[in-house]
Length: 183
Image 1: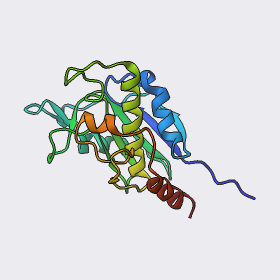
Image 2: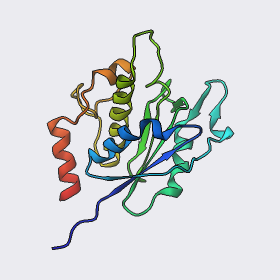
Image 3: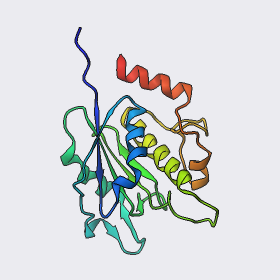
């Protein structure tokens, strides 16, 4: 019997992001989908032309396109940055995924910020990074936004939405992942 090769998820830092700080969370997000995480310490520079001066944010669609050169076969790529990102229709986003191309982008800018002023600790930040990395990777495996507000795949419009999520997929989303990967 032939063993099906595991899909790899390349974890790629963007800008001055310290990928080692959140390595455990990023690897756990890849393993949630039965993937083998592959760490890249080579950074991708953020480009001046991707920065919107009036918004003081990077255009996520432009940054996401830079990840395509690292995409190979069925493997997935997730880029991680500490820069604040947006898409034109929203004030900010935590991440963005291109399902067809198999690349995703995650920003920790608002996951690690202290606004609104609340007591925050490193375990909460680590959980936020895990949940949103798992969310973006879920899109790469064909999952849409979930209506269950506690599921990782629920849409997060605020940090409160991220914190409300449980660090797991709901049973419906989990069954969809199994259908997608093994049928």
